[in-house]
Length: 605
Ligand code: SER
Image 1 (tube, rainbow, N blue to C red):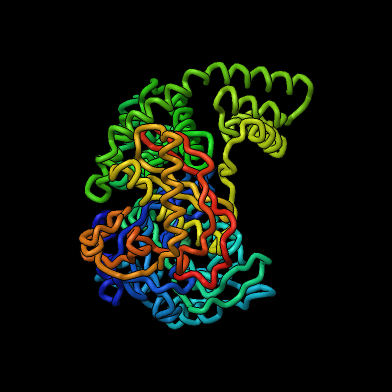
Image 2 (spheres, rainbow, N blue to C red):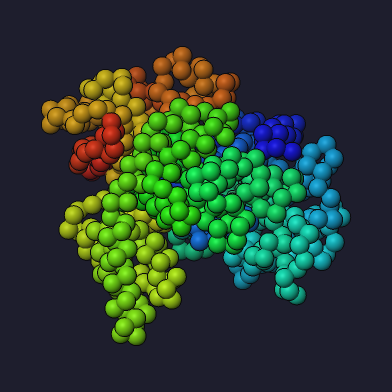
């Protein structure tokens, strides 16, 4: 079975169980400062997991593009990827463990669907701790379905709990499903979760019925949710009897292109194989990030930094394989071709993808050899003095002057038996940031899930801002990104020129006028076509017929959006633009704040 059939079969299966198929979201989260990228299908659904009604009902399923770079060092093994597709089904306060597990089992083992032998299936369940009891219910359901006790593994929170990426938010115990690849066990402790490659994790059912609070406690959510995620690449590998994800049709054209460009063969030896896998993985992720409609470009902060790190790491491995400069851009084109039927945005953004990759590769090339010789001097001097740690100051110089991402310096250091003073690097970075007054949005910064009053206000203010920008600059203004914290909003939009002080003042005036008018904020659910017909600003491409929410602010603005918003604009306070600057070619960035303002008597979801 190919990936294309798997996606369709999954959606059909869950549609048959009363689920509405909804569109996947952008890789770049909107209005959510807690993660840099969409890391799971549940991410765009957080407001609905917390109890807000979803316009498409209580049973949903979809295919979601995901980026996770937490396991970047594992990339090169059989199963870890920084980009992957997740098949998901959700119950928003509807069905719970019994149905979710029974349907997972049916989809995995029925001959009408994936047809895995139940004998190959092992599962894990949450073993419980001081605060939350063991998930004995899930274990009992698996037993009833015929999984023997020896293949139901109770594991601790670090393995069997899906928690929020930030510090607070919806969470709960999960049960994970593994396929036995048939490899022999690596030892007596070999079990699902072991890294030897015997067990391939392909699906995770999360029973999300807790909310983690700021004080670290777990309170029951007002509804019991199910959030499941099945990895397309891993499942396809298992269905095709492959030992790793790189041997499927999702990677074959890319591997062939790397073989052509390098004159090397994947599988020649372990080191070459790892280099192939790292390049293939990182190029695929870079292509999807650059090709996203909310596109990001390489930079030194936030998502741009992750992208830069992926590209630079890929370049380094290309060099290991002896590939010449300029090899990356054509590889991204191969990714676009490979996915053109599922993700047309990759084809639409092909030119941008190619030019950004080429530019970033050449920027890196310009400093790489100088940086490497600096690195050699540093490591030589350290070794001569019997030292093993590269100081934070030096790591920061390599970062700042030679464009070496910290993790890159760490990786080279590791290869030489050295390590890097990460805290020292952070200090040097912070000191530098003070000086250059850069944004507070650090790469990899976690942060809080913030449904606070202030973020709700800023969210409503963002709608007023977008509408006012269109009024002042023209209808070509389109949202390219939005990021809201409890302190400020940040809004990226397509516009070719720097705004004049007069234009900025006029936008402020329009927003403040809409606030003074104390306009009511109302919400209506409708299909995406109806939303377009009403002239609502729609950011994403939802599927034909899909239901979306449209928030209207008096007669002033109307926008497709998930919420939340204030009830009337009068509470917002005074809107002030702090900064207008370039974000990337053709994209401007505004940071703005709300000052003063009355307490909000409850927002609306
Ligand atoms: N959120 C869970 C995961 O990513 C299930 O989708 O594993």
